[in-house]
Image (cartoon, rainbow, N blue to C red; front, side, top):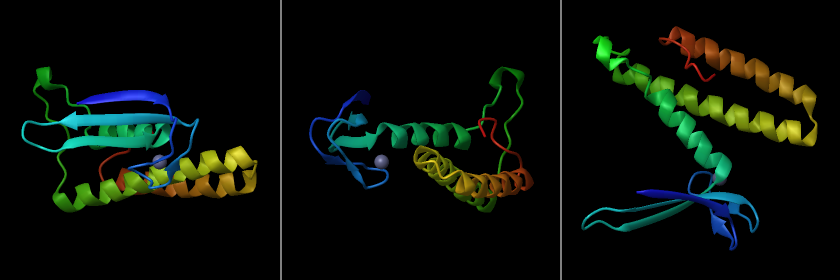
Length: 132
Ligand SMILES: [Zn+2]
């Protein structure tokens, strides 16, 4: 498995959001080839890749293994709902960045309110990830 970062020189589709990675945009390329398996080569907008990274950490909370304390274990239903909230959270953060870019600050406030709701939902489901 290998990840490389570069400016896109040829239009390609982002594996995460399905939109085009335009020439000149920042991109992350993920390569993998397992024994006997297919050769995988996926491109992502740098932002989409970073969201995936944050999501991975949110879904894998820190467990201090040397102290023998297990991290929180969630039932499949709760884990699924937490995953939904995590996805919603990252969609909102992306929306917020887009709104800030175009200077639409009224709607930034609306997004912030929604984000607080998502955080409250997460709190009720066992705790808010530290990166939120
Ligand atoms: Zn993307």
